[in-house]
Image (cartoon, rainbow, N blue to C red; front, top):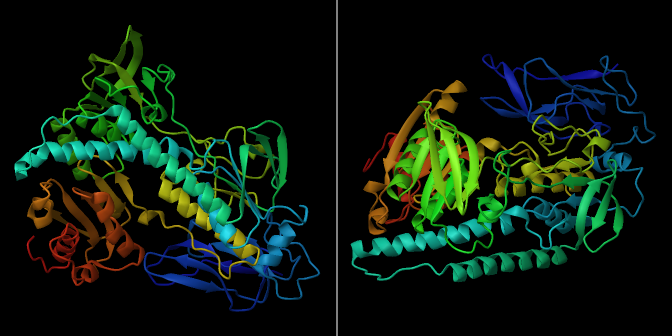
Length: 587
């Protein structure tokens, strides 16, 4: 009879726990008291031992799930033992009498594929897919990377992060030159050569793409240009870009197909007047004289900040009560005001009802909060209302993998779907849709496969999404990591909030960038960092230190006793931490 692995009670006040990662897979041999999984509670992270010797028969609660104390997490017993009703035990195996490893378990799963099959086939060469492929190749796996675009890099490199930031940097330079007169540097006749800026952007993209080609060669990754589709769980059919087809046998597959801009039914993209973010980062002929943006999220606000500073008359229409809902409310409020100073008109709590054209003009009608109808006339309209995943038509239905209501692949903490050996990462899973998240998830998927194939001693840890930094490359820029004050309180934490203004920072004064602040949300008793929210100069770089501090589970006391160089912007982090630790200096 199989033995249960239960969620333990690790303290009188502990009522539940979260599965961080399983150290064993079904079919692996385990010794009595050998650790088989890691759990976490709001007090501690602990390894849980096996109650008996034998084979891990089932995993009943997957990584990332939170369950009450006493829940059955899995079963251990002899291969073929009966377990709870409705749960299938691991099959009996002639090798069950000898210690099994993750590698032998993976070999059993992959026994149906040819011996020359790829260890890993990655579908999609964006920041998640190419990172997964490169890491797997570095670990000695036989890897193929399938990409439909002419160059590797995906949306991030060619139509998103990189071209957007190249354009935004130009706007930053324009802003600094215009403000330089305040420090005695007069720059007359500042203008933007749009054609040259487009060339600069294209050169940045091209050099990065060439670097990816070299990276794949150095990691012995075979790059196959075409559109990949699952044919069951162990094969990928590729419609080759140059014509013809190719079938790839795979022991494991990573789906990294990404997402696309969401189109509104009454505002179809034409690439000329009605634009997606792909079009806006493409080769626009000129800086638009006027631009209406539907959507006040990160994408919409970055384009608003870009074009407003290049002289465009910008209107932002947001359905929600405020812009940048993921941000701390105070942070979003400050940026809202700064964007209005830059010439943006921002209307929140509105509903766009109609989009039409009249000659060269786009007419966008929205319903204001008071019920009145307002029409915005603009040269172009940018629709930035989210990005649905590209999971339709890639063969998911031929596997046991499941999609949620939004079309995202459901995965566990190892980024593995319900189909063993089929993983999904990046924008096609319902985690933060950020390039750095996709890359981190790609590493987890690749290292999980390598561990099962005996190329890596230990499996990777699941990603802690509470510690993912988010950034908005506006002016001023925004960055955050962790929980907001409201989120922390909703989880039952007793919190203390401190804030330090850049107006008090010497380096910010030197840079003429004194707008903004750093806000910390910390445990009221022990000083653990729950969240950091920054709006101000170089926020997207400054977030690294507190993000690392949260990942290491350090406290504001540690930050406050770490000497920070003077004069620097990151002294503001020290000042905020010192205030939270009860040893404020200038705050």
